[in-house]
Image (tube, rainbow, N blue to C red; front, side, top):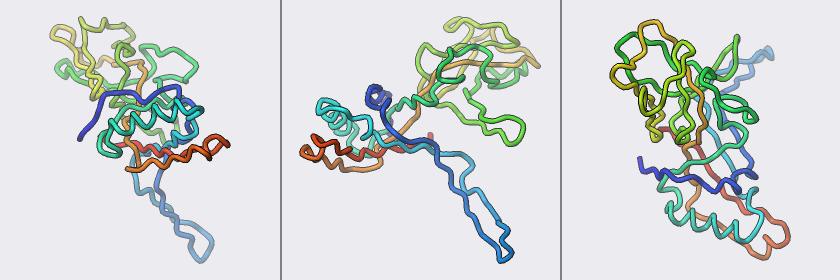
Length: 212
């Protein structure tokens, strides 16, 4: 899949609207009871970047970004300011935020992930686009030095432990990190009305998460 490892302007994405979407079929029976079925195992995020455009310079930056991505052709990184860390947005990531695996003495690679919810029906999200330099890893609470004990592929979200530092059997591997959402534009057309923009009109700039 064609993907550019470049981040959409964060000052614009900060003002965007959007969030997770799920697909659920709901059938109401004659008795009034319901049958519900989830069509997607994982949620998918949608955003409208137009709400973050506050000036003509912002609009120009989006047009340039759109043209370089060739519309819907190339994916890119998006910062969801409501959900971009292994912890709540107002906190700093720590090495014990998320459990990413259990050592068996031989497995060296583990994918980053984030768990939502708790006792009832927690959902695990695979993290594919961690922010470079943000990943902190530990096993059994002991923080491991990046570059010596492990390396992170920021294009895939995979943490690989180096020889001599592979987690022993039974060790709990945890991580903290910041991350971006892999997205693409959801239209090959940007409709810009400068007259309307001067009067407060919001251009529609749809962005949708892509599966990697």
